[in-house]
Length: 228
Image 1 (cartoon, rainbow, N blue to C red):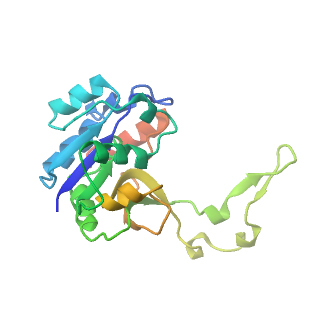
Image 2 (cartoon, rainbow, N blue to C red):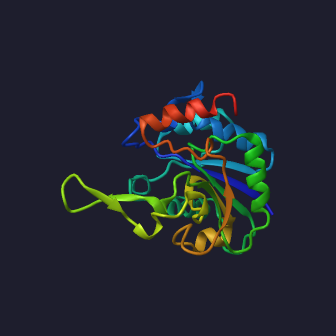
Image 3 (cartoon, rainbow, N blue to C red):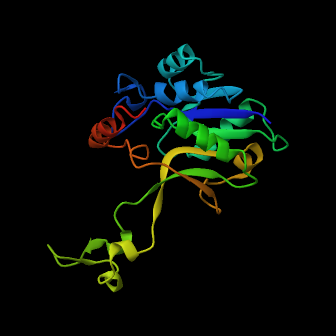
């Protein structure tokens, strides 16, 4: 059974321009997952799927494979992760008969080497489900508030929870959007990573930090400096 890592890295980024090649803690963002995935020495291939020749050349200089340039129709805002992974698998000749483990890692997956090794180790126990990186919600959604139809006023979204201590409420988690894993056959048959019950790997909050807005970037650098 082979392990193959695929990094989806399109050129377009609406909220942070040039995000995947932007400097993060002294090197381009995408360099972090490429270097650490290669450093685990657990993968037969680390593949980058991109529509950008610049990203392709830089990824190859770090040791990743870029067997093709992704088609524009698979690099827009509506293309799903599953579609990108399926495209790579089909292009490299994978089939549902393969028993390989396929790991998807985003350029913003700035995880420690230990976290990567632990995540990959959990992937070895997968059957027909996905393994998903998750973060723990630090604020209870059951105590959220929402705007009312009256201008300037708000109300509790779930007023029945107003008298319950936050530590007594059920814990909630979210898809951290850093990495996923499943067997080849599971990826090829999937419509969505989260459409069926899945296993989870909980990240510490500093590794689960979003990188969607400029302020997210600043917070992530502050939290991760000295940890990776």
